[in-house]
Image 1 (cartoon, rainbow, N blue to C red):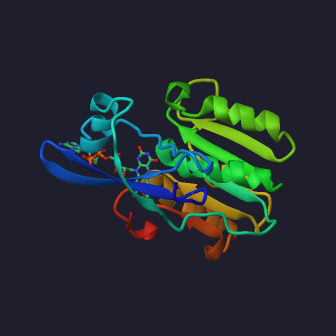
Image 2: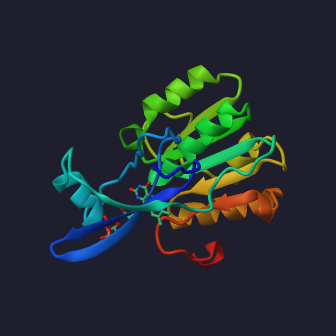
Amino acid sequence: MADHEPGQYIGVRLTINGELVYRHYSLSDTPNGKSYRISIKREEQGQVSRHFHDVLQPGDILELLPPAGDLTLIEGDEPLLLASGGVGQTPLLPMARHALSLGRQVIYLHAALDADHQAFKGELEALKSEYPQHLKAVRIHERGNEAEHIGRIDRSLLAHYLPDLKTRCYFVGPQGFMTAINSALSELGVDEDRRHFEHFGPSRPLEAA
Ligand SMILES: Cc1cc2nc3c(=O)[nH]c(=O)nc-3n(C[C@H](O)[C@H](O)[C@H](O)COP(=O)(O)OP(=O)(O)OC[C@H]3O[C@@H](n4cnc5c(N)ncnc54)[C@H](O)[C@@H]3O)c2cc1C
């Protein structure tokens, strides 16, 4: 197995109906030297995500490109704020696990439509029990009554959970989500070099959205 850092992704190369296609998927678990895990949201019209969900079977062989990506943990002892929207959780979950194993404080904000659309519930609960002093995990749902907050991640919610201005902030999600978080953190005084994000689609400047 090629080694990887928590937060990185791999490429997959598939031939679907005679067409060669490539996609990237974040490695959603910490490195273990034996296997990779990817976690894919099925897009209703998506070519590759539907192929994974509807066609591929256990035992099928996939062609992979080596792990890559710059969204990785920057060493230090500052607290971390990891904010994800929807499937953007995939790189941040292994980063949280790794940071916690190093004794760092992690604020984990996850936004989803509702409880039915929230992935990795069990893993987060397990992490919370393992690191009760270091992990604060907060769910933000647009509807329902299970989450700590109903609505969206906005400036006041970030202000409430941001430990201090030295905090390293990582955020991944839909373009509008990242634009909103980036500007809210900027307004709160978090320097640009402490704001880290990754696009799951074609990259665009956050201000342009
Ligand atoms: C660094 C990186 C990491 C990523 N990590 C993950 C991850 O961990 N998990 C994950 O699920 N994804 C991840 N992605 C996204 C992933 O690479 C794919 O973009 C995603 O799976 C959609 O691919 P697709 O082939 O299914 O959709 P595509 O066919 O490429 O379509 C893209 C979008 O357009 C919509 N669409 C397509 N055709 C139509 C149509 N005719 N009408 C209307 N809408 C349409 C689809 O619904 C979909 O939302 C990552 C991307 C990057 C760049």
